[in-house]
Length: 364
Image (cartoon, rainbow, N blue to C red):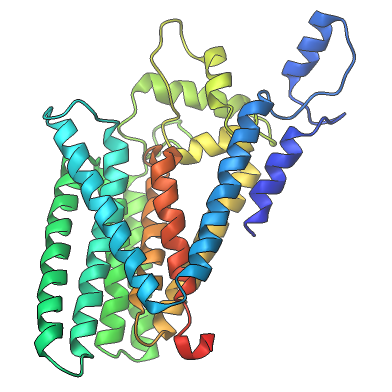
């Protein structure tokens, strides 16, 4: 399924007698030539996007094979938790003006969301290791150290989320936390299958009600833009025009910056789409964007089911499923997923969750 977006980008790069963007017809007319065009209006940017996508898939595969060993899985979990915690702390200092570097509130919101989930998973890991330890002297020291550092990371990431997230992005982060919490409740309470189904259905119904309640039917905006509450009216109206004029095959992956000057006003400071979902719809077209959303949901469900049936170490697929759900929800709220750092952390976490979706006995 991960090959589908890659195939789409390759098709966007190939010269084609049909489906080419009208820009190439205008170029042929202006230059007095007759040649096939491309779906992408900027093949160079599309090629770079394809390269980054393939690199992300490679990272997932590397993490999948490298973290089948439990100690390597723990090392990657701690590394990602420390990276998100330190990054959030640095971005907080930048937001407070104590250092000169700061990227954006949406990047801080997304990295804080991942950091919260990783900190909670680290706490769950420490508790599980302590409960299954055969002796209590040395493990007790390790337990306290892991618990304290994870709690510090949790506090830092909560501060980052509180200082940067919009209400919609905060609700998306809460959905990820509830996903992780529901798995812990089902496992620790040893709920029967019918009780677990009721809990999961309640969570889905509650999330649906929040989405319906936050959706404003009086606005003529696309559903891909409805929840981008931090964007200015100019950004929303520009993106709405781009979506309205967009074709089924899109303008080409990575071409938002190239097509933006056609729609924005002179002197406008717009630099990114209001949301990741709207950016993908402009670049890939709506059908492929829907396919990507379905793939993400399918992957989250697969990891969630793996966490339910996993013995020990179920927190690995659980945190991966929670992260995918939270970031997918935030993809409708801001453009944070277009940040390469967020994408890399999510890819590594996905590989970790897939690697630990089966027990070591099954691996053998």
